[in-house]
Length: 192
Image (cartoon, rainbow, N blue to C red; front, side):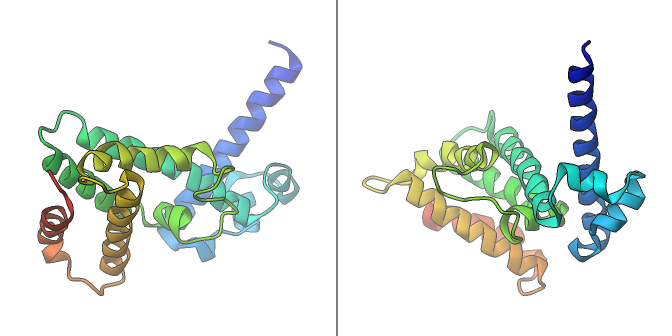
């Protein structure tokens, strides 16, 4: 292995460590607790080493968002794989999405709420974000209905899920009606 290859591997490992540590800290203490100073202390590297990988917290949030988007896409695909019927797949997608948002709130915020410096719905949107939307579109595109643009329908369904996720987490919607919300959403929006 060349010295250059080894250095690249070490750099990638440090970046993974920084992102994983930021994510862990954010999940346990919130994003306000994620500072370069605290990250440097936790991973036992100097702040200049952190800055050699990320220009600041915004880029770290962006890196967490990209990892999270890949995880969300995998979760949605796993939940819908092998489910019979388009309505049942849409309901499985909704459950997987809401479960991800509930169990990974800091990552969810990094993807959808915080400024990670990432472009959405543009030509330069990073691939993990495009793939997360594609994972939704794969299931929801088939239930959009006659004459309805599949991408627009997916955006509407996704916006509904996002609203449910954020309002539930904020205590604005009671958790005990989670399944009824999914059933109503699928019943009213899905054409199959």
